[in-house]
Length: 118
Length: 264
Image (cartoon, rainbow over all chains, first blue to last red):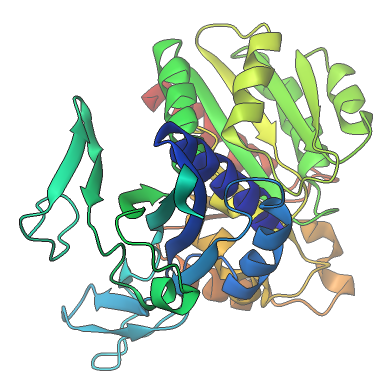
């Protein structure tokens, strides 16, 4: 259940960042979680609501973008969508596939509201 | 277009801080381009700001892991992160190889488990410096735990440090500890499709050890198929077949470690 420790770490980082900016609360958080990142977005959402209790992120809306995995064939060089690490090149059947996208796990941005904003 | 994040913000003011290349704040009156601010219904203009962070979620762990790595490199400490499901024989394998390796190089161990110091006690019996990390409810070791643990261990320069991670084939794959190599261990009493079921772990590993080879005649496990499955997930994976109980194949792995130590 690494989603819980990850949710706690996201909340801690963003709460500190929002305080540094003098914000009253965080209203939105944009995350990018690639389909191959090893994170279940639904599980993260579930943990997030618990992790955010009592912080500036408590009411934040979580928007999660999930880019598809992309592999590049080490033999013939074509790029194609992959959903697993054990992808096979659809052209030449090679297993020498390098994952070029889909492993992202990034806090893209947050929206903060000023203290007197309510 | 913003040169840091590539967003389409034009002419808006951007806050930056010296020396922090990733950090910049777009100040926009309308708040946010994304839908959810509108759904949200906070219409007070000018009070909502979007901070573009583009920060890796594991940023903090990764930074600390790099700090650990730098420390290990400076002191020429070769670090292995051992990963497996519970019961595949990580501790037994260490018990088998450490006495022989100790003849060549000082060895230390960090043990990770949710509870108990059972494994650390087994390591202590070998006469190596050892520290146990009990993660409580935690399912993996992280770079901070290692950072704290090494401060408590008397590590020698030019030595080998084995980190035995929490028994789990999922979560520990995500957390860089600052190790030189990740070693994943499976045993023939598990399924030969394990690399396909837990691809993240096998994708991250540098080396795979198939343990309990002495039990192969009694179980329904195809070692070649397992290797093939592992290679499909990660074609760079090195492969060893051993039995920590009988010692079969252990020498080959020991020689591999000794070679790595020379190159390190």
